[in-house]
Length: 450
Image 1 (cartoon, helix red, strand yellow):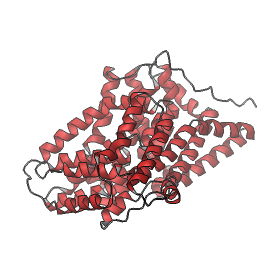
Image 2 (tube, helix red, strand yellow):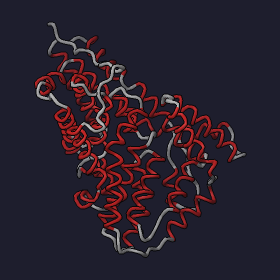
Image 3 (tube, helix red, strand yellow):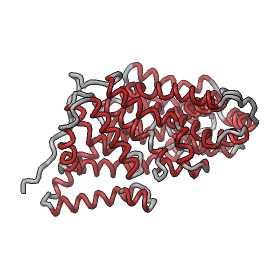
């Protein structure tokens, strides 16, 4: 997988598929039956049925939120918060807001981030510093969004409720975000001028082509209300899609069922006078999530085979005997996530493979699965953007035109999250213990009796 993704620059689906093929051939050569191979694949995919459905609903939810004016309203609120004197911390906070709304750091960087990058350069800021503020905000928003693919994936891999998972990651997320804001404020002192015409043009386009209103924030409020009642993610999203679809018809009287269905299926297509707004808000839809779904199915299949045949256990068993404290467990899991990012360069694999490998070990060590979920985010999700050959690092370097090595020191949020995870492991602060209501769901691996 590392050779394919890093060396040859292939999309991760094909190298993962090749790894599955190699694993299946090994299983047949060593005497496992096709029934056992199929069982391993089924066991792996079974863990991902719920997140797969959630990813599909996320696509529908994003497109309806755009059409209902929810995301455009959040953008206008964020843009109005731009301050010339406090440009860097403001960029961090606005990118965080947009990232939380759309659930994608990639989208933040490639749209709003480009606009902010241009403004920062005209203000004579270090381009790498501006890139660091944009990426930090995008990663923070992505990590805190219920629409985030990695958020939902990490919660699913460790069998944890999404909103419980989001509460747990706050122990590292909030301190990292607070220090990042202070750092950007200090580094941005002395700049008190900027050309805000670009921002004003974007806001004008949003106001003229979308329904910008406090009422449009109802879907956002509904998410938090459902969270307060501890409603599961799927019914929360279905209810939200239904409400947002209703708002689409209210805001656009000429909209019919066929057009609404097309928006939900294929995504929203923005047709404003501003090309950057069109790029940002032409997204969502069920179809847009299919590449992610395909990658998740393949990686879960590979993980299921590795667990079913005891390959992960063979690696973990000698290590597990030495992981006899929370500090060692957290450190080892963080190291595994970072290692996958470095040697494979793929964000989803940095969550799935360590998650499957360490879940039982964490439970046996008295730690709740939620504790592992936070480690997967702090060592997997946030660091992929700092790997020069990683999917996130390559994308951002090409988009902003700043080499990964140059902006890496300024992505404070991503650098701080693993540190606070380590501190939690050594101090026990915010580290969730295994409760009486949580059981270890991992079955013993199949052994070859031949």
